[in-house]
Image (cartoon, rainbow, N blue to C red; front, top):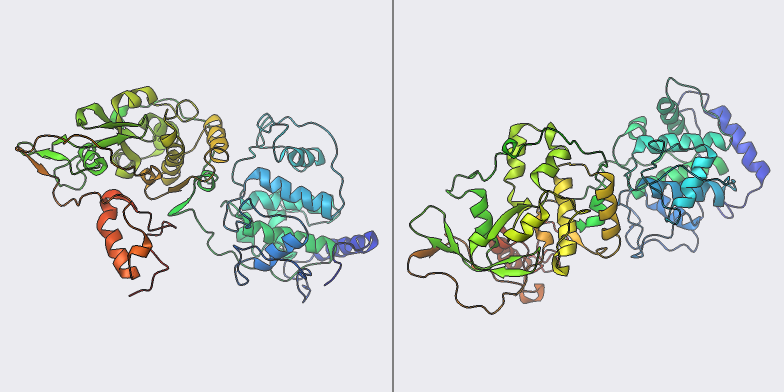
Length: 498
């Protein structure tokens, strides 16, 4: 289908008028064109989109039409969550660059959209077109994930602004999903009503479906999304941040006693605090044989201030997201069992110096960050992972600060949703004197010595050998040798199975 973009205005108007007649019929009356979506001649697919992937043809058309240039790594990021600012830019490119629409001049009342921001001009275009009024009188929330139901409303407004007509229904969303489903822009009314965040491959389906309608008539029935790829295992912290809801904090009712912490949840005689001390010691900690699970000495690194310690009494076990912050961010709605789980989650706890923990207090990253460079980015990533792990919200200042950090200084920082503490690197053990007494102590039972970053995949002949090594050390030290690059729990996947 060559020369698709440059058809005459008369043809476009004719199609719009026909489309306006079609949608007055019940959904399903549309006769789709039996043809390819666009002319892909000479277009190079994105490296991260295989030909048989969901929405692959639509994503390629996005490139053909110059609706996207992809991301900074040269891919499209099909599973990345879309935010409201990015949605605005996609829609305006279609409206202005492809359909030839005008963007009225004028300011916006949105205080959360800097005038020099990446999406500022496009958000202003939609505001002055009457397509959006923002999430409040003064906020557009450009970094918030955009939901499918929101996209449906935006697309209905653009479609009607361009001259299309849809039958009136009881609500704008009812009108949008019925109309867009009948035009083959969305695959089902259920997807169009969804409150789930939209991913970039989904947006390509919607964009090309709307474009095809306005230029040529209804396209083939779009593919079903199925289950969107969620941010599990390891991934960029910035992508995980985009899943988090921004909301005001709940500022009343907090008491530390509401979180039953330092419990022995697994019944092994060690409470959570001592479990973390044992886990975080870089050598086998010396245990006082006269007391139950009492750590006498070890070797710890405090990521908050870059200090090595051997005396556990100088350490605090810090909740990465403080209990008071968790309460203000959603834990006030939890039952006691859920609060106890959070307070004793070893994957969200870290051993640090008492001084650094007191300095932090209950402040969020916009108010306090680790002093040392080595802990700065890992802390930001781990904070995001804990918030996402427990579906906690962020206030606007907190979210914007982390978005700037993770899109700038810490842009390559990865994190695990399952084990937030693994954001912190495992450092080489320094040369230090022998630690602790040797006559009245015993080693932590069953804990292997820390192997450090001592192995590469090339050191193993088969995947099985690598997996056995990984499984032996992972429960105590995480992926200390970085054998599991994608965070799925499978080590050295490129090796022969053996």
